[in-house]
Length: 98
Image 1 (tube, rainbow, N blue to C red):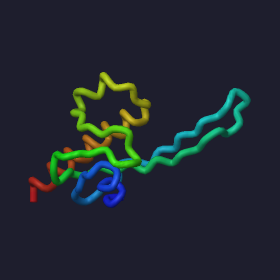
Image 2: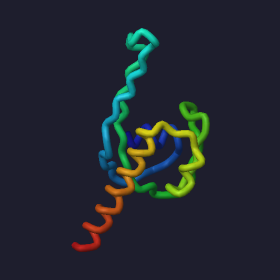
Image 3: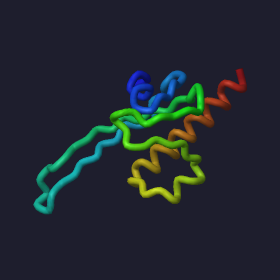
Image 4: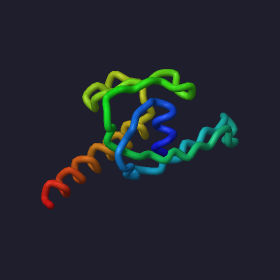
């Protein structure tokens, strides 16, 4: 995953933490399966701020959680981002207690 992130965005990151696994199932009007994606979502700390869209990415940008309201996102994406923020906060709290 870290190699793929680096190839697609030029971002180098620290250790990955699993946030969630989400299924996107798309059906036609008759209920037949059209597409099924399993999305595995991670969070990590970027080791630098530079991002560059690679050949697999149309665009890349940093967004703060406060700015996400202006984006058109799938609700499950918003939930994963919220879960990642909770995980990151709890990880910081745990490490500060040690």
